[in-house]
Length: 414
Ligand code: HEM
Image (tube, rainbow, N blue to C red; front, side, top):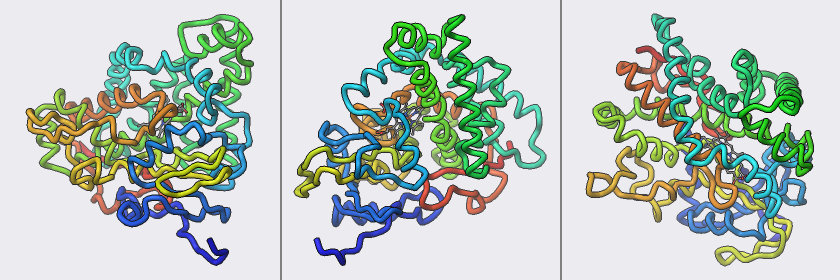
């Protein structure tokens, strides 16, 4: 490779609204494994085909440890954050599974099924409150609904007392949604960490039936992890899914409103169609598109390319979810895509969509995230059948074009 070679700057920009960058489709057809240039002048590999991404995300010779030289960081802030003591999201085997298994039982499918009535009540209570306020002027759905639903649920699992929910939800929003300054965001992160630290102390003295007590009694007291590790793990669970959940609730509403014939179908049979709808939503929109990054620990070969130890790899899951080799007509949003053929659908495999990652690091809370989306979206369309945007679609404010897709304000009426 000559020193004059230039590589396209990455991340690519979304051309408009929620559309993924156009470069992905081009690269899938012409150069599925290529190199890009990041903000710091580094040149990691970009992998855009579904089959190659599976190889990347299941190869133990590739590492998630962000303190390894060559790990692709997306910003200076990310590089700084990568130096902190890691939690399991940034660990390799065997440490990764040792720590992940400490929280996994609270987020698996059976645990999530048990939580459904509580999620339903949380959604109903928030909607009651919102509906009570009326909608003469458009109501921003984010602070009233999309943000508190996932926050209240995860705080409940962690064991945060109800009276602190509103304050903590506000701090979490300042930390993650870019509305505050960098200083405000880091102060909010510190407030949350201090709060969790004191909750760990309280549960050490008096354990209850919640995640923090479980970490304390099963891990900290027997000496498997330190107090600070329990704080970090709880903090990870608090923040990891926050922005993505808000984005997916918002997109669920807007996407259905933008597909009126599918909305009609959905309203006619929401209980049957909610699961395939949410699965298609989580294929069509990838809310966390930059999470799946790795660095090679040794030289490897991938799709005919030699990737050297210390070179970074970005697995573009957003591209994989639109891979025409795996999904028919992938640019089309179709709530029947994952419905069986005999029932009039396309009969495709929902698990193949990559919005929750793949392999050992696949989202630990995927079942919970799906349950929350199913309950939130089915309930809002049942209770507010005339729900509509209070502004034209073209006026929706989106996250910056090079960041993960997101909606900044969502004024609605009903
Ligand atoms: C629709 C919502 C969500 C989306 C799209 C999403 C997406 C993802 C993705 C793509 C990964 C894989 C990262 C990788 O390979 O490095 C991941 C991992 C993870 N997610 Fe989620 N997530 C969502 C909801 C949640 C929620 C609600 C929580 C917590 C309650 C959560 C906690 C985590 C954690 C802790 C990991 C790390 C797993 C590991 O490294 O073993 N996520 N998520």
